Length: 235
Length: 278
Image (spheres, rainbow over the protein chains, first blue to last red):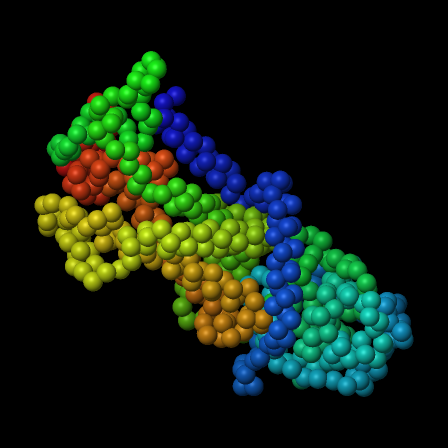
């Protein structure tokens, strides 16, 4: 093999390898490198988060309304069956001094905020809605989250869907347990009776059909985070 | 056409090792000695060039896979003026990552390779002086026009414009600028809340995502033209980007090479599988 043939062969092999790689997830050996990059990115993202930015949407901005997508993992729209499961309640527990068990009425009576914010989906689309609900920081205050609560797990009745967050993002003033959307009560397609909504996390971190908020000393993964999406999912 | 001149005719490949007689410290042949070993591209430039091929290749193919999760730009409930192919995914054969999460994980890892490589390259050409071969100068427009005239057979001889002609210069100068724009627009859609001022500067998330896409398209177009021109005008330059060796007697100026129209110069090797005859 002379040098010309060597380079031709080399270029051919690379091209063949590249073609075979098309649409694949890449070599297994790269997985640890990708994990390493994800951890480093999380560090950078959490440092950026420390600057305390908020999502700002102009007051006259148009809302997505009915075009706001409805995602869930169950086969059909999850609806809380009161006859089978009793009255829906939101449990707030884990690393807290006073665990809470709130009915929707209890939640609505708490100090609420209404905010028009962006929603960023991991897929690349974005939508706008006006959410009404209680800040997670308010729930943490009322429940008396302890200082070893570094993470929060948001659990649901949409099959086994849940996602855990870093405490800083959960306590962000724009992170709500929302029960209202666009000045109406939350519909079943959007996570009724209550869901997490925050512009500081990608859509999949915003657990819908909420049942339990668990303050934790360690992170506990999540439905999509365990399936390959980055755990942090910050925006 | 045998335009090669000087002592290089029939010489030994500049990029190859000089032959030794195997007897003691016998000097290499006078022919080899008469042709100085030339390195057209510094090794840092060569390494960063090929690392960039890998990094950009990963960023573009994984980016297209990410794009396929929502191959459109409009915010939900709104319309977008400027993308006629909304809803049509990119063919899977052009993508890498397998699925959205896989592509994202690669994208957010390879971005550091692209960034670090670009930083090394730019720092190097700044400190080592290579930037002078790329920086725009007064007269580039006129030089570009002369090159276009030459390529269109409106001028008989290849203009002599230094290491790179004016058209090459504009392409090689715009690559790092587009790379920087890719990183800036990428940051704006990665962190539209944490870096809101940047995202707003670009017209908001939807527009920033569009600019990111257009920058990618520009990079792809320039790369395609670059690859075509390497093979159609100066395939000898391929070696200069691998070993660094380059034979000026085979330069486009020496061969009077237009895209696809040039003859293989006479050389030490009597093969004639070069470009097309005029």
